[in-house]
Image (cartoon, rainbow, N blue to C red; front, side, top):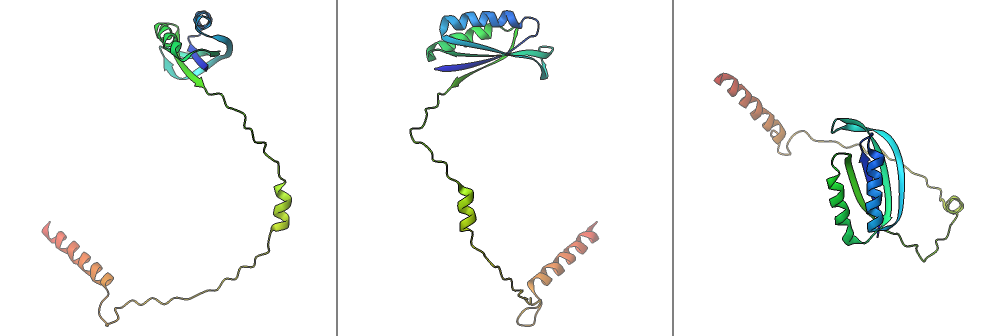
Length: 155
């Protein structure tokens, strides 16, 4: 399996730590590639550090040796600020070849012309009840105002 290990190290002793980690990764796996991303500021202070060196190590190893590597990294508390070990999944190339279709030409030819007609419809709302009485909305507002008056008298 392919693995990617990102290390965030203290600025002073970062190179020494990476050489130790490289040595242990070479014992465990093969095809080691080390990329130094450089010194960057941290979003927040970690162990009184505001800047750190970033490294990315790509390597191949078996799944059962990953625990050994993480145990070694946990012991490097002095120089190592953070680490992240990810398993890279290899993507298989699809066997189907995709055809490139010129969509723009087809869209221009196939566009139908559409005319939209809009009519205004006026609606009349009745405010009263059909029987000529008071509507339920008017009743609820009347009861609400009476309740407010009653609460005011109690105080």
